[in-house]
Length: 392
Figure (spheres, rainbow, N blue to C red):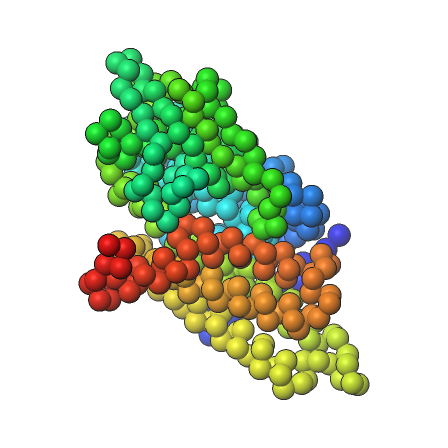
């Protein structure tokens, strides 16, 4: 059973920028990860199984919908707190952060922001308490980076909607109780529907054989003439603005979360460099190893400042989707490069489950692709600074 020695990475005294509440939230989640996640996560990843027994504990520490108002079952916290929660959970495992991120940013957020009051009262308290798990249906087998090309659609049948189509690469789908599904109406306008498990014609086959996010359940959403009650339509938004705003919220969390994986890899490599003796001295005393560690902590520090500033802008209502896109791309790429360097520092031990690095590296290969690929985010930044749309 692994013993988690992590204490934090703070080369620039960034803790001085945090409020007492923010540090308390961060430390609470860090302790949960140390006690409940780190000792068991390698085993669950090796078995490709989601540690669903952690869901009540995650709810108890406020991981589900932390920025949703408390009256609806959320935490009523600010966005820096939300980011810190994602950071600490992803230090444990990206797959676990995916479960939490989907629940809060992609299910609770759209229901709170675009749902009716009846929908909020029905679903949000259950989701916030972890008694109900949700998933988010946007990506399709033939439409990933181009969600506007979706073919999933529904028809108005007077007393209900009839939904047909399929979604792919859906986190939580194999065991989710509800799905927030984006589909086109008869006019071709994208709308959001809440689809509940048990509705006839709705199935969620699991995706097997993943090398990445193995502790996270991934699957499909298949709709074969599913009858969806009209009260399950999200009334507050039309068009791609709805799902894209959800993705911005989730991408913000990923920008913080990836730092957690990077910190864990750096911390592991730093400790190993002081303990591993070669040629009569610790490998951390060699120049090349110090170069790697110095570059790691520098990149983590830059990412921390980027994420913190973005969090402040988000709390002030000033953060743009393009700014969030930059942070997601930069911080995930940073984390993946650190994971690769840290793996090399550990040599052959770096590929074993005795250390978390290879698991983080494999997970980050998914994180750099989902919710906007690395290249798509580059083009979003390029469009923002030039005013020229490379997608047309």
